[in-house]
Image (cartoon, rainbow, N blue to C red; front, side):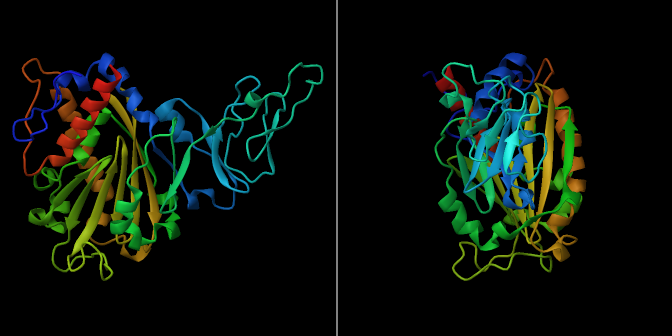
Length: 356
C-alpha cells in the first residue's frame, strides 16, 4: 500500500485528479465499488404484488435480480438457470415464476419446481438449477441487496437520528419519480451532493429556505450526514424529546451512503436519489418519492426539488467540461465546508488501493 492519494488532513489534501472523471481506465477500475449494499426498493413498492424485479440494480451492477415475497422476502437472481432468460419481466402477483422461454418454473423461495423435457437429463436437478440468492437487509422499510456479503452499514447509529420518521409507513408516490441523464461523471454528482458550500451561489431559492450558517456535515464509516436548518417560520421536523437534535429547527436530513445512494428526508417524506454510472462522462440519476405527509410537500426546502436538480445539473455539466482542461488537474478542499467530499474521495482512494 503506497502513499494515499488523498491526504487524511483536509487542510493539506488535494482533490482527486481530473483523469478520474474523464478516462475510461479509471471509470472501469471504480466499478468494483458498487458490489456492496445498494438500495433495492421500499416495501411500499410491492403494492399488492409479491414479485418485484429491481431494474435499476442491473443498470448499476449488470446483475438482474428480483425481490420475492413468499414465507419471507428474499432477493434472488432474475436469470433463468436454463438458458439465461429473464424470469420475472414485470411486477406481479404469482404463486410460482415461469420462464417464458422454455417453461422452467421456480417456487417463490427460488427453488426449481418443474422443467419440461428434462426427464432424461442425468444429474438433474442440481443445486445450481435453483435461482441464486443474494444478501438482503431491511432498514426503515427499505430493502438493500449486495453482490457479496458486505459489512453492514451503520443502521443503529442512523436509527437514533432518523428512526422517529417511521419511514416504514411511507408510501411510494410515482408522481415524484424522475429519471435524469446528465452529461457528467457520476462522481461529480456525488461531490456536488456532499457539500452545501455551493448553495448561496447555485441555489438562490434553497438559500432562502435553509440557514447557511447552521448547515452542518457529519462523516461516518460508510457515509455522510448533512443537516439543513430551517429559516425562521419555515416548515421543520417535529423532533421528539431525547432526539440528538431536539430543540433545533431542522428542515432536512441529507444522508449519503457509499457510493451512490442519497436519502433526502423532509417533513413531508423521503426523496431518494440513486446514481447510476453510464460512462466516464454520462450518468443516470433516478429519483423516487416516498410520502409521509403530502400537505407539507409545498413548503420549505423539500418543495424545491426539481428547481434544485436543474441548477445542480447545470453546474455539474460545466464542471465536467472543466475536467478536460489542460491546465486543471487537482483542487483543494474547504476545511469548513467540504468535509463530505474529502471523506468520499478518501473512501474511493482506499478501496482502489486495496484492489490494486
